[in-house]
Amino acid sequence: MKAFTIIEILIVMAIIGVLIGFGFANLNFGSRNDLNLSVNEIVAALRNAQSNSMTQEKGSEWSVHFENPPSNKGFYEIYKESIYSSANVVSHINLRETVKFDDPSSGSSKNISFSVLSGFPSGSGSDVIIISLKNNPSETKTINIKANGQIEY
Image (tube, rainbow, N blue to C red; front, top):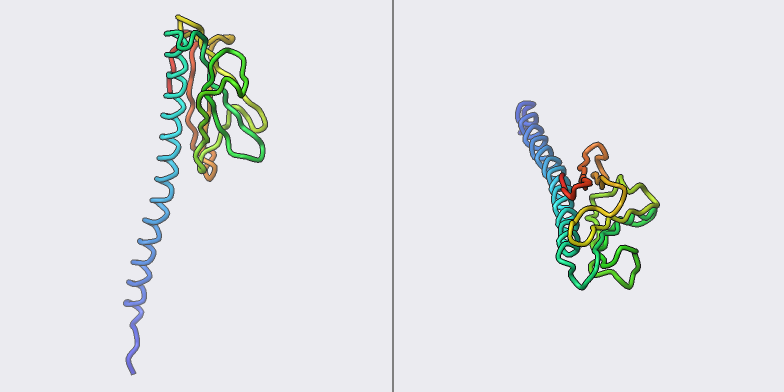
């Protein structure tokens, strides 16, 4: 009668463990990649609105609306004018499935408008947008919109 030795079983178990480890590592890497891509896309939207305001594209101020509904995934919209209205929306972008807003908080929204010509934020100065991974909320990215118009992340 032939059977497997304990060493053969341990070797197979070790190989399976390594393969599972690589699988989990790839899942985590994919989520981090989504977080980085989302930050880059949000920064691009902010800079686009800022640039449009500075050049007075379509003769108006430009803004970005961030929405964090409690039961849905978050989204942001680029719109012309300083007052948010669905009629003024030029572009609507949903957050990726693995990413969520931390600021604005759940159930709230935030508008960031840029002044014509200067490109400075129209609000009370600096502002932030914070996003994180849904499966690992400690993994966050912060986008700072400074009073002088700088956008850092």
